[in-house]
View 1 (cartoon, rainbow, N blue to C red):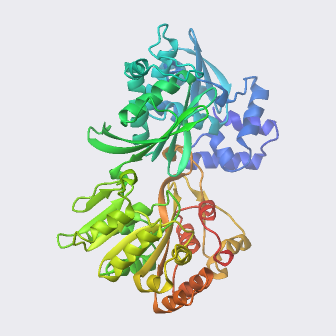
View 2: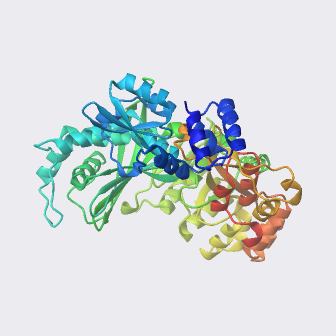
Length: 577
């Protein structure tokens, strides 16, 4: 029956006979719907197809983003059937079910839904991408549905258990606030949000108050996604519940606060795992914005070979960490995976013969056999004080979370020059510019040249979904402009994201690192002593075989691991730096 779709588009002159034949062959070969085949071949856009069907069949064309679907309607059709037929239930009135479809000419689908639900089906038309987005939104997980059910129950309850605190009030009834957070619906709502985030692999949960709504977003693979938009009445109870769980002062709403939550989660396979969460709150104009960072140890990769190093870069890095003394610096912006690289390095060195001590702000993951210290600035336990005390603990290897000031760098250099291996991080754009960052902190060049043995710059890029990635056809000139050589252009075949159910229709799944590992050779030491510019140091390092961030990204494009857009977003051409 779905061939009717092709005939309708042929009648509207959106397809020709040859294109219809191609689409039928594509449909049969790839076992997809007729609509998917036509759009995939690029013959007709989703929008034009939907509008054309609406004109010819008389069914309304709808924007699914404008609809709020209730759980009782969603439960009428299973997620498997919704994905199989590309349909989304919208509304139910008595014995009639409004069903959004890509292809309402497929009577087999309509009959199947009627049989499964026992309801008369009234089709409406929506684009395929809109239906896929709606399926991901409403069928995302059992936990997502549970959240919607909780919200619906609270909204419809006549005697709601959520206590509303007016915006203009300056004094808060703490007993009332605590009581509101201990009501069963709020406890269940907050727990379910956390569980859903953990199962989806989110690294952060953002609770964001606005003038008329309370938005919750997850960061997954480095990108933020809105998961729900709650009514404003949830703002204070939900925020206070999170603050209570993290041992914050719920009465203090004017100052930033930090806290911690440890949660044991039961997985779908019956196993349990513990997750550590770091909580931060700041006072925004419409209330407190709370960000919960999820530290899931199962997501931590401690195998250096799995981080994304190129073979040559990994050999340089392994040679550096096997040295008995010196400083190894890892640089990059916040969220670039520096902690993972450092943990992987010290885990690789962890043995009964080594005394390894770390100073971190805060300790993100606990590693057996390594002595880890939490920084507490408020009582004077900063990086410099910790590092100074470490030297009296007979260490072999030390990790300092960050080199923020001259005092910390000075002690680290002295430690390196007296037979210790020191790891730390600095915030710079690339490996070579780290030298000038240290000079700007009033460190003498001869001390840098004598102590620093390697510098690693890194970024994180999203990995293409292997199930749905597709070829990205670019001209040779465009590839050369990105950084490929004329010889490489002849063989490189890049991919681009597409989107499927496996990757939540994003086209990406997971992340990997791109690395620039600069070994401080004798030539580079001479340049440091001569106060050479960063670009000159980088040029010399490249002449000696250093793979730059852009080159590391190009390798991953060539291997089909990531897209051109991801590499361009995180790196610049070497000649432009």
